[in-house]
Image (cartoon, rainbow, N blue to C red; front, side, top):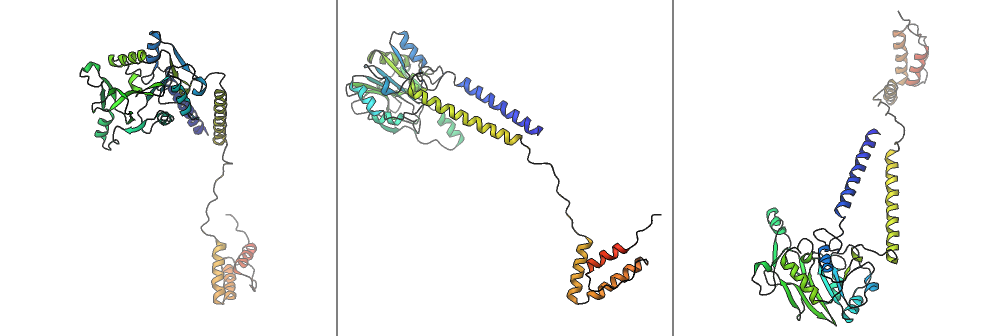
Length: 355
């Protein structure tokens, strides 16, 4: 039991350290969040817009409840929360009202939840940008470290290039789209086009993330978007975990999360109770008996019975007993078995005196 308690204490300490490390790592928010200060967050872009005097709003409710006056709706992926409702009607109403949409895709394969729905609502077709990763360790290492230089079409100045880690998939631009940035192969990875009464800008999320926006070309691109699109920007933070305190979805989400925590706590307590409870009293197996006089006599009697001379064997048993101890009384064996006869002779035998 002492070893079990020590093992449980070590396991609990490891779990606490793991939770603390995860909490410290995720303190800045999720990837793509305008509140995240991590390398994949968009906090720098939001602060830049605010510093330039652009009104910025953080959406903390479902999109269907938040969109109002025409503005720039920034949808940055990957989302940390699924969109359970259909987004197509909401985005089309926003574009029909004259609003703009900034669609920052993740480039992951398969794409995160919600990204495919948004692309479908905007009329975009998915396209593959890289083959599958090689199996060789050295080739895979080179594949994983590959970077692309994105430049405006016809731009030869190296200072105008933005270096990004190569990603797996993107979206094909419509025929009327304007290319903003292209890769070394000339494929448009950032482009803009008109849809209904609004405009749509599609670009990789890493392009304006905290880890890339420090380059002059990325800052110029953000300034171009700030001046080219509508004045106010609305960052969708609801799908990155930000929820208004009075929202019905937040109440339900918290309730489900609380029930999940209670379930984990009950399972944890049951596991501790099962480990702490002893598995019955301590006992040892009885020694295995490989043989005895009774077994020998039973087998011997069975042999004499099959041969038909059990009476002679009984008489011989009495005679041998009297030879070993003359004080054994003489008796007629009759029809008694060898086992019962041996037990009777042993009971009639006088005990030996100790010298």
